[in-house]
Amino acid sequence: MRTDTLLIFFTAVGLQIALVASVESDERNEEVSDEVEDISELQKRDQMEFDMAEIEEDQSLEDAHYLEGVGEELNDDEDSETQQGLDNMESELESEEEGAGGLTEEVAKGEDEVE
Image (tube, rainbow, N blue to C red; front, side, top):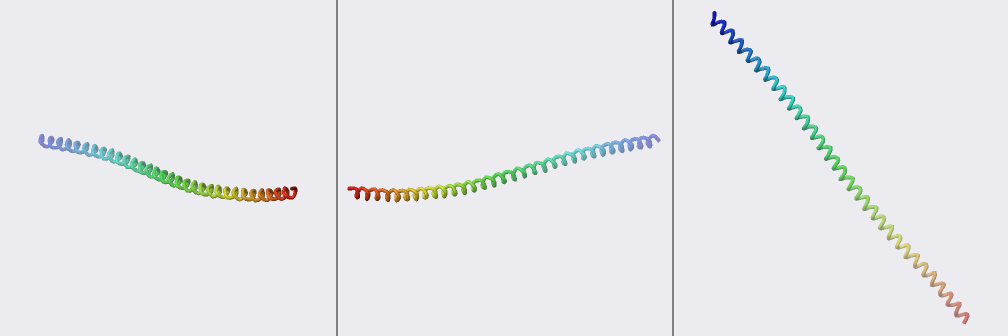
């Protein structure tokens, strides 16, 4: 009977140790699982932030290229307007010279008549 009692006692102690080990293992697995989920969420968040940063960078590059193109277009327009203005000034000067030349000829004719 003493052997049976010891056998039952050691069996109960063994089962209790196995149960405690199983519970601790489950707790560790839950902790590890929670840590893995947290890391996974952080990685997803980091990836989203990285993607957003890339999108913003691409957008700023597109804006810069657009502004550069518009600036070149404006410079081309200004250059053509400047050239057109210079051409207009040359035309006006030629017109004034012709008009002044005609007056000079008339004055010269008038002087010839006076003499």
